[in-house]
Amino acid sequence: MSEYSRKNPSARYVELLENYKQLHKDGEKVMGLAAENTFPGFSVFPQVERIKRLCELSDADEILDYGAGKGKQYDMPMVDIGGGEKELLVDYWDVMTVHCFDPAYEPFSELPSDKFDAVISTDMLEHCPEEDVEWVVDEIFSFAKKAVFANVACYPAKKVLPNGENAHCTIKPPEWWVEKFTRSAQRNPAVKNWMLVVAEVVDGKMHETVYEG
Image (tube, rainbow, N blue to C red):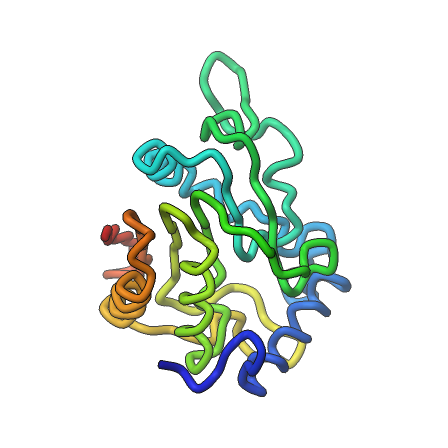
């Protein structure tokens, strides 16, 4: 088990959290992104079909988006359902509610007190320090009653932190991430279904591998 936790995160976690709070407030200057366009939450959209399948498999009605950014992904119909029509994510997933949590964005920074049928986390874990990943993954599982979904990137980000570092601070091979999820699932047996999507750059092309437990 990790020596760190939500109540006792590493000094690196605290430092990076302050950097992300600053990005949310001031925007990302290297890429020229205004504050409202920095971490809006749109990283969920490439994964909507997989999340929908997991919601159907686990009969999920309530979802926690852990690391939701500004939550703009839930504000308006954005999922293309054909015929020129678009649908809200909650309707497309056929769930009742989605609760947003993001420790770096003040409106969503309060840690949830409830459990949810499913917890999703997109484009977030690779932003956590290596020494804190284990407790963060455990926390994600601890909020789930039935299912967990996450995707991670195994390559550098385009965004740069205010301290000059790359935003992806933990770049590990897929096997490393799978081990973290497998162990956390074993510690949380109530969660019957989990899905981890790991993205790598192979021969110059993006390649995603899906692991399920």
